[in-house]
Length: 292
Image (cartoon, rainbow, N blue to C red; front, side, top):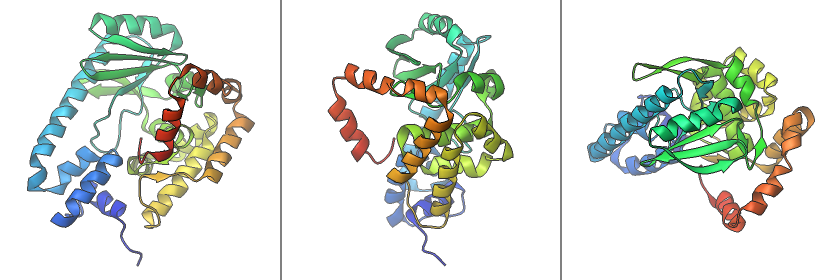
């Protein structure tokens, strides 16, 4: 029987099948933060010394949902969908990501500004707004460094559905689409896989997921995520885990071969780097970071 990694112990805590001894709790706490599973961990760890942390994180979660609900109210009747929003376990994000049809972006920004949000960044495929510490990223296309790696219009038209936030109707992407989005985000944009990505795949992946990945030209990212998560399940890897260069090259080769939009927008990386004055700092952080 293979050894049980710290990652697998964290997974069992999140699934409420393991109560760690006190000497493990602090290590698992840090690991849960890196894997974006802090709230789920706190809810199930049953540690008296983390009770105040649980109360604080639950408060943050309620605050996050209240703000998300207000954004949903503001965007009523527009073509939008929350994405990277739903997870199989309770999750507090650092921001709210919203896909918005490009023709509806001006009205979405106007409505959010009328509710006290301020525009802080405008980029080719993203508008970022902020209000009292709550950040909303409006995307017309999922992208990194101005390179489009997934068809946002297709996701909006074919992969969105009605959801509820605190009982208020909203729009979000389907669970199958969340798996595809998690894989694409981890592989093409971040180059790091977190345990929350694997949980999303393990719980929500289906045959529809594979078909959708083919349509969105991101099948290689699904294959990579499945392979990495299998190694994690077999106690071969800890998370977060940085993707090896040969897998990234394979994933990008697929995009260059099959995705015209990716090819056309790839030169935008140069424009992005030229505009940034802190390129060295950005590259150093990407190389040295443990999570995203």
